[in-house]
Length: 607
Image 1 (spheres, rainbow, N blue to C red):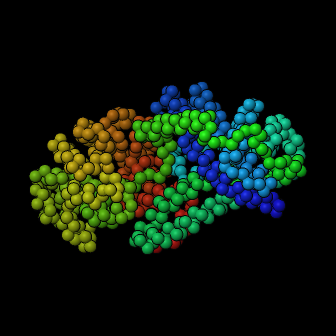
Image 2 (cartoon, rainbow, N blue to C red; image 1 turned 30 degrees about the vertical axis):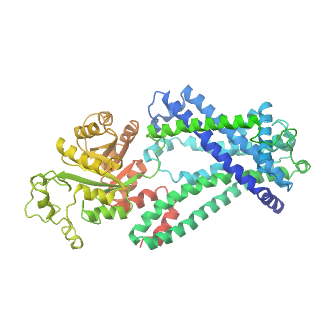
Image 3 (cartoon, rainbow, N blue to C red; image 1 turned 135 degrees about the vertical axis):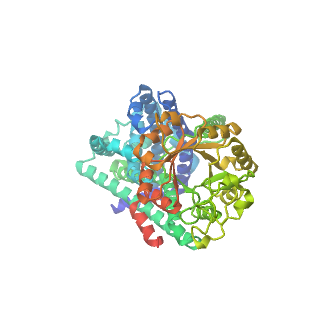
């Protein structure tokens, strides 16, 4: 064991510069070429299917379509070819390192491409399947951590967990794949180093005994457990550093919500970077098994034969590079255009946006500058406020049609009957707390200045008159915040009017209850998003699918208790409108975060 650990270290360190450079180039190749193609194929499968958008309820039928099966097989072949290239290249560089010989990048790429070409000529189709198998098994132990950062709607899980046989089958399949991987673990080394086919590599496989099967499986599991510990250790260290910085720069009540957001982001970032190392480290350990055999020890480092080292001075290399550059630009132009024009997001399973209701209205008087500033301080993703117009057509921020509930006005007069000067004289903060005595009812312009560009503006228009809508729109345009504003209303006709004024402005239809089919609501072409009352959404989870199938987003209101916040997060909504942005962020981001990490953060920062 000690010799193999030493050999592992030697394989990784002798040619570490070439290894790291190749890993970066290889991943860039995936990001710029393979994955855009795969994304296009998957989207194409949806476009030629009877479905506009594939939900969990339609997933089984979608996957059984002949067109989907064919395209998924093609995607599997592409992924397998991509994985095979990496394993062949790693086999070459690890063999050089095992013999303590240096290998520069260009000779290394030349040898690897030559071996790939030879393998394709000999028809090693099984290698594509094997490479995909090894990639899946190496990453599967790390999927659980990444998957824990995804919110799976509860009613999805209910549908899945009813099929217990799926989990049993998955365990059996994993064991079968692990055995298959061990059985053929030397095949890529044999192909890359001896130009043997997979059937010709039996001489190595014959040396495998049941005892070795168990040993290799045990070492594989232990190695990936260690890698997971290292990854989580990195998360904790980085989080501790960030936590110290946030504690110094933020108020104590804000720290936990901020840390949970940062933890989620750092988690995904490190998980993405870890992809660079997971397969190379695992395959290095697998290669130590190969190089431990006496037959492998006699092999000399593979040479390039008569193949010249790659050089951009060669005409073939120039033309190949030019064609690849054209393909990369074309693929990614299509990919970027698709992302811009197709805003539906196939797998929108991350934490929902936190939208402060009338500002942080649990901590400051609603719809005041203090509440809006509090929401900004608490890092709300969006801030909602209500707008009425005064008798002299000044848009002011207040929820009720009258001023009695939220001001010190002696008479409960209508906002539309009062001038702006009369509105301005009212105290909108003392009713909430003496701390906020003297808070005024802000104008629309004042509210925008506080929010933009710190958060998205959610403008709830309470005045349904056409003239009022036009006045508010002109202000949004003058302040250049149309692109950062979601125009909300209970009136569908008002949303149609705002779209007529500017089709690019985002609209959100507020719905508290309705009669008839949900599709009459979600099919409105002038509505981009919906805001449903919370209980209505939770009692009818299919509404989420109904909105998503129209390529639209769904937010719920007004969600305040921890139980409600947890329920709508698990349900998979896109946004939560709440009086408690901090609480909502803590609950929403705690769902996809490891419970142990969440508890540690609470113990350290939630005083």
